[in-house]
Image (cartoon, rainbow, N blue to C red; front, side, top):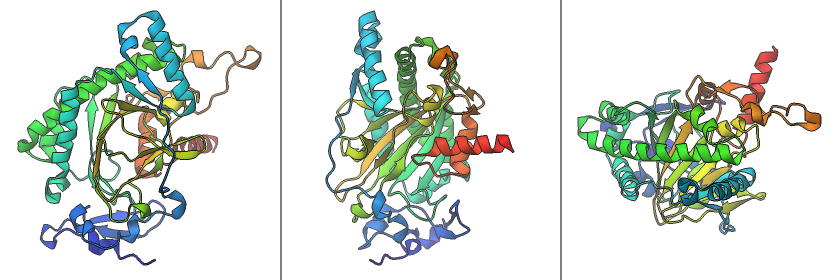
Length: 390
């Protein structure tokens, strides 16, 4: 089947002069793509070849629906020993199998989260020329990008994203980012997302405590580890697609970060690889998705599994989500607590699943050297071991 050239379909009006040079990490081939314009793409009978994924990666028409573990946080917040133990056991069961669960009664202000998702919709409806004021620079995790065309020339995801950082203990950092990149008129937009980050930070700290309890370490182990950390917030927009069976909204990958908390609309499109197959995940009203990332898998010495997932698109409706990626401080060494490294066979130490690294080293690897997939952490660890032995 023939597909038309991506360049001719992705160019913005010539008067904007917004061409972006893109290059894959694996070749010297570069192409010129000027942003991701859903309205222009929708006018074409077929999607550009750059968005076509190999058949083996594409979604099947009908997938079994995953029975997602649902963790009720009310008992944990109340603090009764029996309730805390039951909640921790539910998390432990989810994290040793799927690395993925829903949380309900999470105490995130509903008005704040709804407003944040609505503001993300407004953000993506801005003119492309405005969004490109915050164009993501090479090697950076922050900014606007259409279809990751700044980094890759094939298997492009059918989406656009806008990412920004939130440093714990820094006031108005999100507001400053929006005004410095987009202009003073977007201060209110920054304030909405700043408030959202404050709510999600509180939830993330509770989840860190819960993960510690579930591993037998107590509440403070991971809370203290992440207390001087940061997060990356990624606003995702998945436009409707005329050939959704040919592409993906997000390719299969595990998040390199520690923990991801996802707030999504009710359109659906998230899929998780569980029990040896891809399974669809139905959105649950008022619930948030939590999944384990590679960094926390390393912090648990491999006891908890990083969640392999992807996103699909559809013909009828666009989909939006907000991903809150929890990260340790950039220079902090990612190493399991000592309590997880004792009690092996014969009373000896438990073998290390992964070598020491810092979050900044892993982030740099994923931003400049490697396209995140199902084996990101293993590939990163192998490279570190090889470099240390030479």
